[in-house]
Image (cartoon, rainbow, N blue to C red):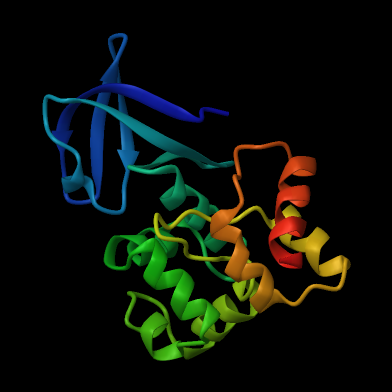
Length: 182
């Protein structure tokens, strides 16, 4: 699987970019291709969508966008062609907040998202996304461990921004427990 690609943006179209690296041009579908600058060297985080009749690349400016896209793909009835416009018209923080607060009306503003799909998104993703200041998706393993130890989700959400998520999971747990005990 390709994690990211770094290369020169050759062209920008309404739903994709062409990025050139080592003499190969890759067509990459993106939520908002205009965040990239033509003729600039850019790093694009990728998702490879492979089906028997299709091989597509989906690209994102940040890893947080890609992580949310992957979470959306796990929702029953939601594929990449529906998930991409959601990210194009909403922010990572806004989408995570709407899911957490069960804001069906906010989710219905996205193309191809009706009430039924909005409810399914909330059902499948509520509590699995937390918007921090920078908007990344939190370490679900850490949350599950803390919940299994008897801590409540609101208390866990309060201390998550203070936990260094670049540490190994064991150290993250120790750090989180210290914060929860204080």
